[in-house]
Length: 548
Length: 73
Image (cartoon, rainbow over all chains, first blue to last red; front, side, top):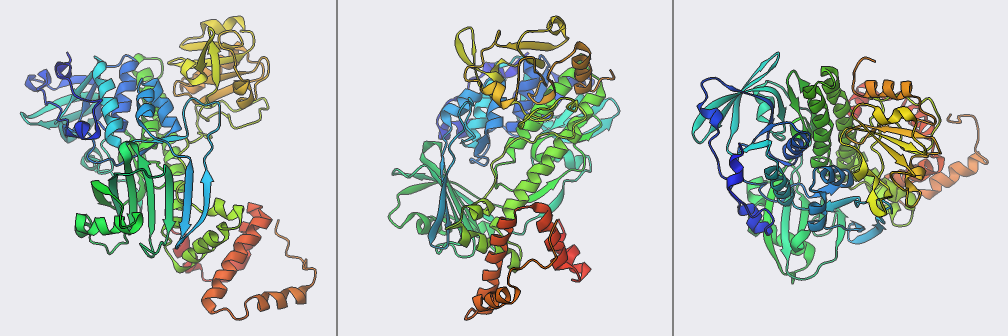
């Protein structure tokens, strides 16, 4: 049954069209059932994280009920920077190209201090990767393309205007009470994923907290549509004359829309600051008095750097902003949430298919808590640099900025947000520690780096060639046993794929006979110079948390 | 490891130069100059363990309560 299949929406429309879409609430047969209907997986929240999780699970063959408390896409553009890893995950989900086609990229960044540019940098992309380091794209477009994909998958049951208002956790599931325009009903979920954002209702209803550091500062986002051409660059001002004692960030989005982010300070009145008569003079002071622009969207926000102590609570698993919150500097919110989703999807799938036990699902907690700590550390550091919390902190910040005019070393200290990169899960219990020596970054726990490859005389990319479950990447001839490992796609580099520019071997420090075992979420979990069947089978058992 | 053995080529010359470098600066300007000096020297040293050790020694004897306040996450 697919109630959503009846209606078509302009999900490939313009920004205004996409934001105007109202998804139809459709009464589910579950609502008339005498007893709560059982579902193996319920995902709560159809934002970028919940949608990615639902699509991943559905592609793996799992039926998913996806609930959203609203019937619209993201209001305003919100998250705008989607990093390489997110694009690679979305490639696996069939929407990466869509995002890249619509998104924009900048390479030139300029940093200003007071009234002068102190330096500029060019993010020359490293060659030999299919995807750029990031794209800028309004969140409503990202969600539109994800919804479009979700609607193509018959085993996703996407229910708009379905608000969970009570959760009763049990040993073998969670009983969800859901409010709809037709009144409330209940679902008996074997597993529930709470992807319901920073003010997670699931978290609150379960009496759980996300704790950490709250920043006493307010920021104004103004998205403005420029009428004339404007350079495709990212500009960051520390303490500019047009906005003294605070920071300002300007960067581009598709459709000639520019994001301007003004630090306002804690005493600013959010209601007052949201008024166009307050915003327009600020934007004019920055762009010049003859600048021709239209306001698209504005919002005043605060943020906290915080996380839940644990992301797995019995049969309820938290992912994305519900589990952890970061400052926007460094684009680690939506990006880390999509990585949560990818980490969770295969583990839940394997558990439900009986390939692995609850220990595999349990490993989602420590792996993503570790990644959240790394993201929190990075975003907290950027925040402290951008908005110094003490006189001495400001003194050193200004010293670094002054030195940055002349000295390259100081430019590396200047921190207006570090680009989101996936965490290397060094301490994961799914890793098999190295016995052999390898150089480079591709240690167990790292996400596999992409490389251009040739399959059947056609250009392809290494990440696209990986299997849906595990992949054994062998450089050279295949050992006889390598072809019938369970749930493993064996790829022979040199036979199945040609390492077009030698970049795969270089990035993996591979020699003839070297082999890498890659998880379904494309993390390296083991590697050898000369693998044996016993070693590979043991590593597979370790990586699926199955006793060997 | 941080070298705390006598290592300055010309100790008195260095000290005089340091004080002279601050001549004519207001206290605020001197603080700013010191901050730049710390960053320049830290980059020259490079080694994280040495820098951490120096911070620890420089801080020694300061009140413990303020340490807790400032390192609070």
